[in-house]
Image (tube, rainbow, N blue to C red; front, side, top):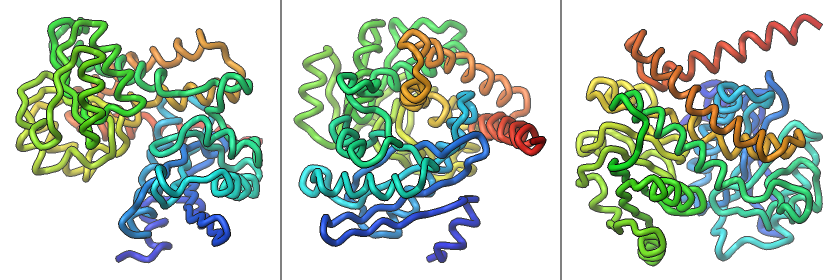
Length: 355
């Protein structure tokens, strides 16, 4: 296994903070990747990782992704992320979350967080009791509330951009989509798709959840084991990352991959090229799932809901530009997105160095 410092060199991180508090059973990692554009922004995930090494790898990948996500979305924020090691259904307590908030406070504004897998607006309330550097708090407390609907809207716009590229029209009526993972964002995406008369297949690791969502929105429930056998236009991974890999790419029958999950490609370079060679259009996850961070950014800046939706709908044009560059230079869509994001970071670095 690589040493921690060699991993930081590989990903290009600025700082990693380990948070430990035996009294509250808190074990967490905060990773700050880049702060060229502004303070590092990233969600807090609570997950039962098999090993601490797995937790570190996850937070490093997620925080780097946030740097690129903020850059390509045009936000003046850097990239960070945090993970709390534990079962959110069993281990989460007010004391644990508030203690975690103290660790964020000690970073003096260098890191700002929001909710993610295993956390929710109520959890952000507890963190807010200890630090102001948190977003996604309930609207009743002056926050923007649950960012999931806006995140789903961004994914929806990304799907439309891909459908336009692949089929010549962005009309979704009559198309078919496999939504893997019907949590907060996944459910809202299912709703948006069904409103456009899309045939939707839903899958989740929680079988009772599949049935509930399928019944509520008129979707078709499928097991996790059979989703790659379905012949559909679009595969939308909305759970954890790494589901697009050598094995699944060889099984996929879709022509577009566009979902909300972070780090969907198990190996960005290898699997991005595989998809390009197979003619499967991949919407870079950090581009089309940026609605959630746009919602939180709007909360920080005091933007109206109308402005938030306008910024989120711009994901359509951003995605179209990435697809055009990918086609022009015959590079994967991920490479194209990275080039655009890296150029903005480099350009702003020149501006900041002038004063």
